[in-house]
Image 1 (tube, helix red, strand yellow):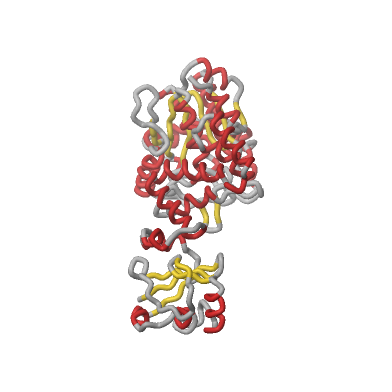
Image 2: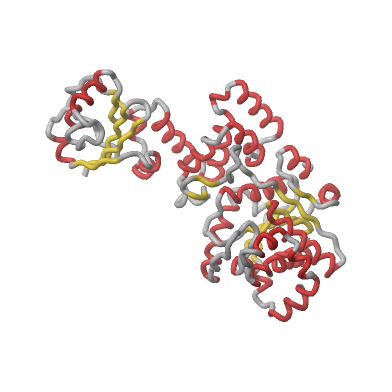
Length: 427
């Protein structure tokens, strides 16, 4: 059985660890859990660090539990938040939980006999618990002084913290107690911002049962420039292909900086230490080849979106950034084409003008309303210099007749120079 803590150490995935945790994991196979917030119908790559904790835990022979907070999701965790969150109803939470379990199955084995992953919902044990029972059986074990000393609470005291969110750490602490008592879970893991909530759970377990439980957290993953990992200008990078397309997902990983790639591949890949160190050495010899980024993007895109979607994303990248051909461009469906060229200037023309034997110079200037070239002379000079392509076919003659096949029977792709693209839509 692999040593779980040793595995996390070389991957740079340990921030805090409670004394005795490593000894517990070496002594016996251990059940551990991580909580996931069900306030959206999809996880995003900010959740991936925690998912990979469970992946490595299971690969090392231990049993992972994923807790989806159907009850705590109705309350809201103040950790890392500056304002009170909107609360969801039970129906929305049930839908989100179902989606999250489906996404976790990309990473965790819910089928194997010995250490199959399990999903639990804390609504199961909170739905019938009365307020007085909660105060008597949970609240009396933790002092207000203990709770207000936690960073997640202190940081909100000046701006305001409702009793609802203040009670969150008691609810999460009871989760740990319930799983410890009913399912034999002895370890809770999470991000570094969860340390206060997690140790509250170990304290409730100690005071109610006299037993010992353990805690482990991961560092906050940031990019080399100090910004938060997993965010783009458009917002979160989601695992749901309807929210973040496979192409955009692939591009996120492919475009990470060299300084980030070495850290990220250790966290998000399941390759062995030797395999990763070999990749790192090869990357350092030829950093321009972006070997780490390509392997990282390949592995994670296949895991989340399938090998077919990965292949299509690579082809789409070749269209925009590589030396693709006109035939390869024809293979791209409309959805992928629009994803690849999201943000590229678009101009709409009438399909009828393409049947009038017009030449490329007129088309690129007058018939596109000067959007691509402001004058015939400018268009003619650049075509003659070999700087213009239509549908990845370089124009050779400024008087050439427009006889290009429409992509998806609707689009023409014009490339002006090395980096300037225009999408012409014919209606």
